Structure formats: C-alpha cells, structure tokens
Image 1 (cartoon, rainbow over the protein chains, first blue to last red):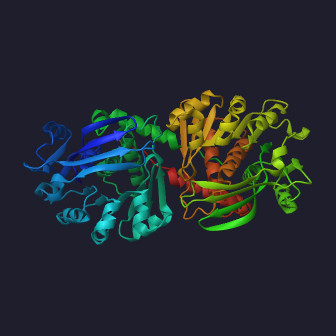
Image 2: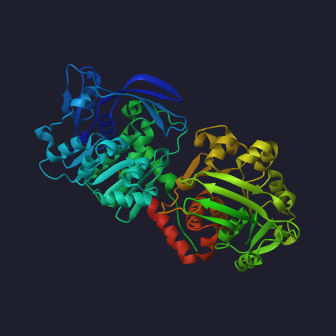
Image 3: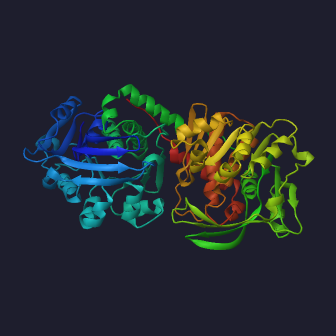
Length: 307
Length: 307
C-alpha cells in the first residue's frame, strides 16, 4: 500500500502572538508526508525544491518511508517561500510574502513506480497541475482527495471545475466553501459543491473542527481544545495527511471509515499546532497518537438514554 | 420534581438577514420554560412583566406545566423590551434598544411552594438578584446553574464573584469566558473560571457548539449544521432549558449525565433558531426532540479501531 502526496516543499517564515521563526521547513506535501507516514508507507512524494532545501530534511523524510524520486531538485533556483503573520485568534492570518521561485516551473512527472498507487492526496496547487497528476495514473485510484484555495477560484475557475469532476474528496475551509458555492449556509454550500463533482466534502473550520458531507449525511469532528495553539501553519495539510494515511492503511473508503479518518486527521493536526512548523510532528510516537485519539473519543462520547 | 427558572419575560424586536419582527415574546425565562417543560414539570417561573404581557402567552405556558405564581405583574408599567439586529454570520449582533421598564424594579420573592426545589436555573440578571434568589431557598438545591454576561463583569464584578461562589454550573459564551478569566485560550479560561467557584463550566460557541468543563475533563457538543439559521435569539436560554430540564428529569448530576444534558440542550437550541422568537419551540413534539437527538448521535458518532 502506498499514498501519493503532491504539493509544495518549502520554507516558511512565521509570526504568531507567541513567537517568530525566520526560516523553517514547510509546504503542503511536507506536512502530509510527516502525518501520513505514521499510518502508511511508502509515501510517494511529488514536489519541487531548489538548491537550498536541506539534505537532512530529505533524509529525515526518507527514514520515515517517504520516497523522494518524484521530488525534482532545481539546482539554480531557490525553494518556494511563504511568510505570514497570525492574528490573536489564530483563525486568520496575513500573507506577507509569497516567493514562488521553483514553484513557477512545477510540472510534475510521476515516476513509473508511483503510477499504480491507489490513494492520491493533491495538495493546494494550480488545478491544472492537479489534473496533470491524475492523468498520469495508470488506473483510476481508489480515492483521490484534493485541497484548493480561494485564489484558484478567482484566477483558474474553469480549470478548478474540471479537476473537481475528477476527484472523490475535496478538503477546503469554511470561507472557501462559501466562496466556491456562493452559499453562506455550510449545509447548502456542501450540496452545491458536491454537485460540482466530489462525492465527499470536508469543510475545515480550524479551531472549530471539521465537517464531512456525503450525500445527505454529515459528520462532525471537533478540534481538541488546547491550552495553547502555538502555530497553526500546516494544520490543514497535517489533517489531510492523517486522513489519507488512515484511509490508505485500511483501504476502506466507506463513509463510516472516513469518520474515523477525520478523527485521526484531527488528532494529527492537534499535535501540529503545538510547535512551529512540522517540529512537533517529527517527535510524536504511535503511543502519542493513540493517546490523543483516546482524548477525542472522550471529548465527544456520550450515552443517550432518553424518556 | 421541579425546576425553578429565574429570568426575564419580555418583548423583543428582531432583525435578521432573513426577516424582521417588531414585537415578539421573548426573555430568558420564557425560553428556559418552553424548552425545559418538555422534560420536567412543573417549571417554577420567577420573573416580572408589565401590563402589556399577553395573557394568552401566560395561558400557553401554564398549559405546559409552568407555574406562574412567581411572576410579578406590574399594572402600570411596560414589560422589558430588547431590540437587536443580527449580522450575516448570525454569531454577532448589535443591540439597538434596551428598555428596562419593569425590570428596573425586579426584586424576586420566591413563593413558599418553590423554596424546596432541587434544581434552579438563574437566567442572565444582575448578580445581586441571582444571589437573592439562592438565599431564599430552604435547602441547598441539588444543582444551581446560572448565566451571566459581559455587562455585569464591567459594572458588578464584586457581586458577580460572590454569586459565582454559590453556584454549580456557569453557562457563558466564549467571549464572556475570555473576559471573565482574562485568558484567550478557552482551556485556560475554564481553569480560571472554575477556580472562581462553579465546579462545572459550559462555554457556548453558537454555531460552533458548546464545551463542558469539569476538573480536568472536557466534553464537546457541536451545533447541528442547519440549512438556515433563521433567528438565534433565545438559543442560549433554550439550550439552558434543555440542559436543566434533562438534569431535573433524571435527577442525576454526574459529569456523564451532563454530557447527555448538553446534547439535549443543543437539540432544543437547534429547533429554537428555525423560526422567530420561541415560535418553533411551541410547535415541537417529543417525537421531534427524539428525532433531532438521533441526528446528534449520527453527527458525532464514530468507531475507532486503530492499529
């Protein structure tokens, strides 16, 4: 079993009310790989980096069962760089800098060994790139999930509509769901978005948890109430990695199992936000993951014996 | 078994993105009574109204097992009036008018028949009034819950601190919890607030659900994702009514049973917001309540079988 993770591997500069880092490894595929590799190996990484991306990061990922054959290294350009500042509520942030660098040339070619993978996670990228990855698969994967963002709705909506028809699961946040659907009510937004293609929609609400929609069913998983959210960067990608990692491990794409996958993803995300960048994800053990999932069970579990 | 409900019975004028009413019955004790009377009777109402409060509303409440002996009717004054306008997100509102009218003279005297009740819900009022009600009880009730608001933290903090020491459960919203504790993190806020007196703290987050804290335990109940939230007025009081109604019916004040009570309260609140004022609460049946609680079970229920 394997999981393809397509996305950025990058440097971030992050400022939160609790501190600041000028350069830390980030990128959607990095977070997906750190989270998913706890559940399934190999992770078949598809990304692009510059000459400056640290070899020890590559080695660290490889040790966790992340295949890097699909990661292009551009020798004369810098890695993608993003810089942002979070507000006190941590649910909103300002982007300060976006230097595309190598990302401007990203034209992923899937290694032959990746092309029969059953599970694909498409990180937030231009929808044409997401489509191009899907078209390189030998067979239709068992489950394709994708992330996107409001920017693509503004500049590449036709391409986004095309790729939405090709995927099974869309993961976006609440404001993106509202923008994509033109509906304020998330229940109505979900109906509209699912009519655009994806049979499953996950709406991420940050500290307010996540909703999973499928047909007329809905499931909700809270975020774990934490004493401190130190740095939310990568929490959404970490959630996606935990979700797809659990799905790929169990090879079960039923709605019931997706509920469990959402809890797994939420547990991983709750670790991610405890330190800057992916630092916390590098430390945690299987036991940590189980402990936290148990906390989720206790958080929402109740008995109903009514009149 | 009985439940004392102390609070306002009033008129509201409400404007939401979906419509407008110029005068509809409202008030915290009205919502508590409509919700709680589905689970426990009698509700022993403690409030004050003016000459203008409709007799048919009183009759309607009496038919549901709401005792009105503790409701003072002031013949030459008007009932409390509140007017507000909701923003598109329905989680924030502007108060347009607050006419205290009879509420300025509220000095509740508990009827003799109320004084040995085991369960007390103190709606949002001046903390001195809340204290005065508690002091009139013959024995310490089994469970006293109270609501409050930021206004009292600003103008009557010493009195609020006093009454907080006398109650078991405090129900406030997230911004009130932050203001009362001086902590941004709700987990830290909960610790600080519980150190002020209440052994149980419920933090209401509107469309984002509710958290129950006790010692080092936490439980989360989501709000039901609804197609439309028509009017959130009274949702918090309806939640409180459902919560205390379930507790008074079962006479079980364990943390486990409070979890169930939170789900019951959330189910009642999800009905409340479907129409203006308490209109929807007047219509629903026991079967409706059970159906909706079942929806909550489906919303959060998941299996965990991990590695």
